[in-house]
Length: 166
Image 1 (cartoon, rainbow, N blue to C red):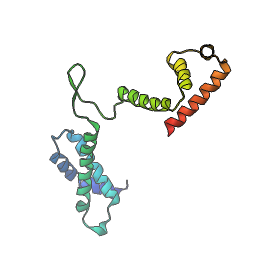
Image 2 (cartoon, rainbow, N blue to C red; image 1 turned 180 degrees about the vertical axis):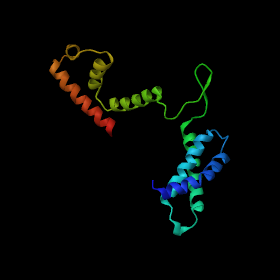
Image 3 (cartoon, one colour; image 1 turned 135 degrees about the horizontal axis):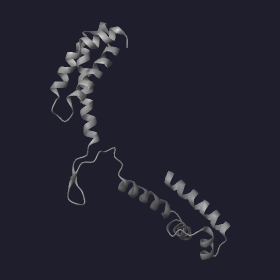
Image 4 (cartoon, rainbow, N blue to C red; image 1 turned 45 degrees about the vertical axis):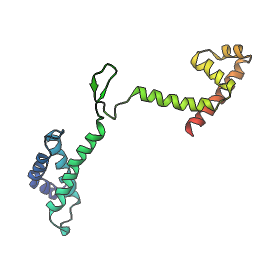
């Protein structure tokens, strides 16, 4: 940032402080609000064109916008409180991974892909991935060679990948 921009920002830091104070006590630390307002000043200084009017008439809405963005991000990042299985309240951040959701979503996708398979192909998948049998054991159970089971598994997995990608 060149000195002209720096001068504009430094001269108007009290404005950023004042804007941050207006929004204090609403769930975000004052220092964070000040930082956001300062960021708005910096963006305004960089984009400011003196021919279009006073700096403050351009900078104040930008700084307010940055402060309001903090609140929007806060509202998106925290879910409402809910009761856990043990009856206690908890708030979960939206960005936090929920393994239960991931498992449920994966189950739906796999069930859809499995539904497109023939009964014999579903049996091979069940024996291999649920019961954990080797290809040779599957072959012995269904009356096929290990090589035939290997080719069948490759074909089945290809088909399931296509179903998942669709």
